Length: 82
Image (spheres, rainbow, N blue to C red):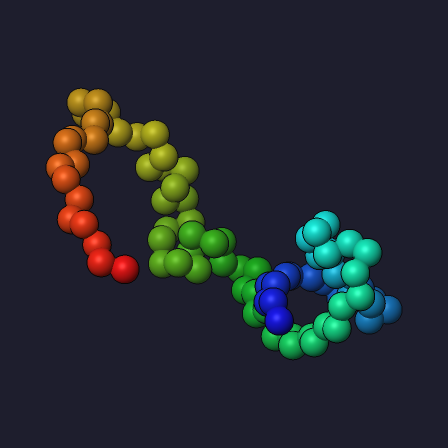
């Protein structure tokens, strides 16, 4: 059994259209549908929903004016036991 998470909209006739990956084409599938309504608050922008001011990203994106940022030497990673 495989799990695929999809978001879809139910139209006014109560019809949901599911689009699945193409590799499932021409196969017979047994589907189990579990639904959960998505609560949306149209008054909040995604930034506000996460606790940021509404214009936070617009004001801060690309605002760095200091020296160029570089990634320093990372060193040697510990060998992990799997």
